Image (tube, rainbow, N blue to C red; front, top):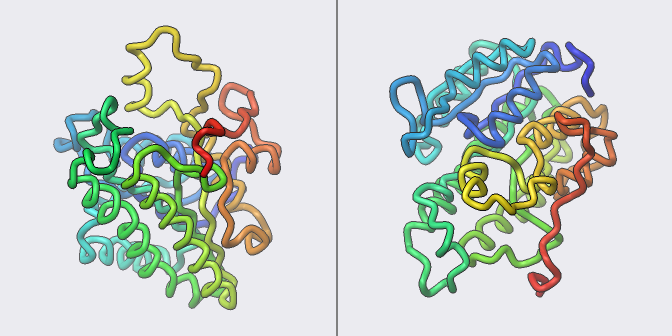
Length: 284
């Protein structure tokens, strides 16, 4: 999967690609020559939560890796803005091969100590962040992208999730939202199969995103060996995009570590990081 140009001519939209997993996915696709449209609200001169990364920077890095990066500002809670993204892609390219739903508002104003508090103590703002800027955002982007893929008789929709064989994720809002996306992907796969369009859910492990690195920097004893780079997920998405028969996997949810093993993928440091697993105490 490290063959330069393997995805030449492919057109991809990666939502929520200012930083973190989204950026890792965009860069990995660009490295194989794809044209990658990156969306998000963080643009030059205005970044969410005062974080420095932007979609403009991601697009530039995609081009530096060998692909074509295009930044399109978009608030994915605004259906009109989402429609404009896909109108622009279709006007410019006349095709759409892959949609990666990565946008997620559930970590804004993240309260690390209180994240695993019981649901009756959770702030109601989680609904907007996790359902409107999460589940619904994935659904609306897919709803708009699907007919474009159906028209050309091929396509792939990937949604990033948190998942470990249906174990409880420790926060009720978070658990319901992430498992809703898993179920949504399964339903989309069923309805899109006659059109040769695949839908797959992909669960990253403990990724070294900007937020994670900031959190663990306060704990020198944190076992960094269990973490993976955001590009580990990206390499798995790139493998799915290059797969000649993604329909075999359509409707299913995979942990990144499992998919990496199946495709023979290594992380940027050469390791094949095992899939992240929650403790058995999180099982039902």
